[in-house]
Length: 224
Image 1: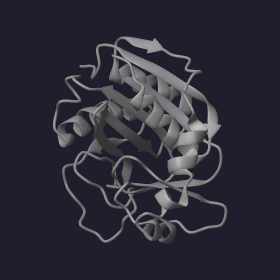
Image 2: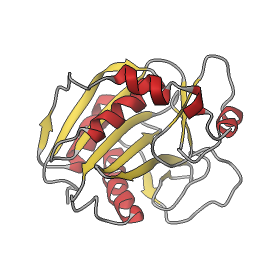
Image 3: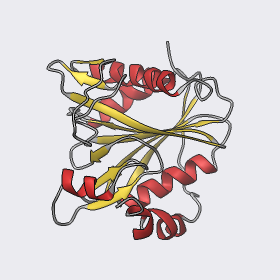
């Protein structure tokens, strides 16, 4: 059964910096309409994102390297290396049935649909309810309940969520997909029977949000 009866879909055509990607997600969520919105997007260069409550030093230690942009997300979750993944965001408006569910329930519903899309692309996977209590802060080493793991138990998909006065923001990351376009179609089909393609050109002042938040060292390193 589809998660959404109707879903706006935007395949963002622009590969953006880490700070820009986070700013776009925040603006889409804050200025959202009455329908849920799926955004699938790309990264312009090497980037690592980490959850709102994570330490900056943990991110740089987990994925060290020159030329990597480290960006603190608005959502929770762990540390994600975006050099090896595909990314999507769901913005779900206040009052939507999925938004009103508890965090684990909404996470599980979205990831069940995500797992279906991965299976459709030939990726062996399943949801897990087991929690690895290891020390690593890397999102893809430390699974949490309802993350998606592969046949050998390796984590393939995780996400961070934030609830705000605008609704629920879910930022997801997927590994192991070989055909990006095939997966995009499969994800949309698993989420809804009523996809509405969007071409969003008026995002608001992305540069202002980058300057004040995601590109600002005071935000990035607020938990050193």
